[in-house]
Image (cartoon, rainbow, N blue to C red; front, side, top):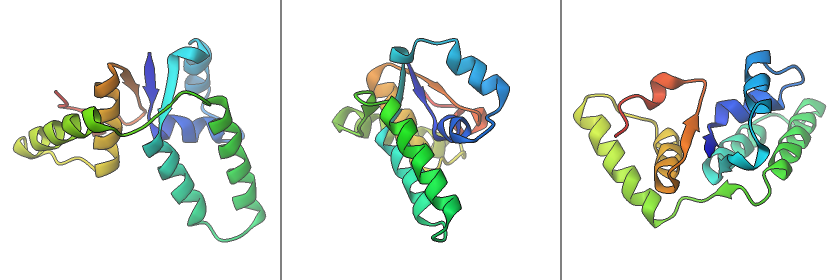
Length: 129
């Protein structure tokens, strides 16, 4: 099973997503793909920061349609993820490679649930124990 990073979901919401990303997702069983509440929050924040416009409404509708596809497959940041988060943030800091809070939370959720993480920004998730 696979947790999708925010950038994967954002790509899929585009009117013409990258062919490689679409093909990769299409090659997997829908039930094997998960999102998390952190990704939902990142996307919702991005939409909320847009000026009130038809573009924002279009993006919000695309986001809601995408979220609906993951009904029952949206993971939360719980106690086990919190412990994983602390460990991986400390590890990255010790390496001199700090990590963004949201990326660390997403990685921690994947670790807590034993999931692989799919991202287009592999560098952001390097050196995670």
